[in-house]
Length: 271
Length: 271
Image (cartoon, rainbow over all chains, first blue to last red):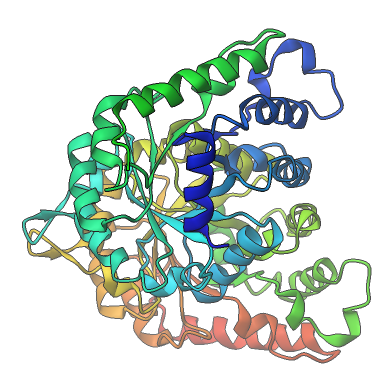
């Protein structure tokens, strides 16, 4: 089964466009589990168990696992093993490097770890991400317009009277022969998101920024979904993970995830 | 001692602008060491021992270590420990991510591993790399114009009648209050390299592409060095590492490194 089918199936099964970002900062874990053998893993497993019927995807940002040192690598592997088979997994590593190096990154993410999807930086050009494009049944989400203030520094620059990020979207669509390209567009830019959706048709868009970063759910759902009311994956990390720092953290995460899922569905056009 | 002094000192001590990229592909190791306990580490230690008085820096591309799985992380740490204190170390991870994630990457590279310098992608804007800029005594080399064919896809786009890569160089110079910004510019673009050198003054430029990728040594030394005949670090990986696949691999690497160092020095203006 390829990525597109898998995503479609889980969206329908769980009636959800929500992705929970398993970005585990060890200094934010609830006190009562900090003395366990591997608190990060235990925390992640509890979050997954509590939210697995409420999400379409889990995303893991590699930075958080790298920061754990050597144990992080193994923890990431164990976290992935704890995710039910039918839920989409996104390796958020924002990789981008030249030829043979890119191949090693793609192999690590897709084959060694076995993620369904990855994030990557397109800015070094097609050959720098060709190994990602070659994984036909996987999906790569390319950084297009990020949710941070610094997106103004380069991504909005004028290229032939249009913003650079639109050029990114168009160029990546030219790489999409295998139908396996996606886009990362922050929820903090709903108007721009609508323009990008128009350019990329029904390609999947990964949308961070509706949680801690304050993007509007209504505006980004209306702008980001495709013609079937799908194709948009809304990532929330801290807002769900740290809904409570007490013993009820998993139940609180579930409640928060359900609220966000339901709010997204309220504005979602049904296919 | 900050990065600038350390680089200046080692350039003078070893009379070298050569950086050897310790990008160890386990399937290219000499046969006779493949059955050792950790062949990659043994290989790296031999290369370092054979070249440590011929280089100014060692660069490790994280992709190669990630591809080794969990052992790679520890191997990278051990490789770093094998590098003499006075030689510059560059963590080539090309990271770039938003706020709190960027902080975790910077911490991993500069504090946990203890690299002197890193590579980073500037395209998500200043706040995405602020944690790197905050490390005053370290150096971050920002991707500016890469050596691969795909650099044509985005980096050459016209922004206000000038190429995007020049805008990158100028914007990053605006982030350089701590004098700790560097640039990555491929040797395959010597004319563009000269233009970037003019824009960035005496800031350090990391120049890949004179080895396997075929950039001219003469042209890139003339274009890339600063006013003191320094400030340019020429990286060669495969050309040195795999100079021989026999039992003489370390001696062959040393000879090749000396040849390249001497060729660079031939064209280098003395300060």
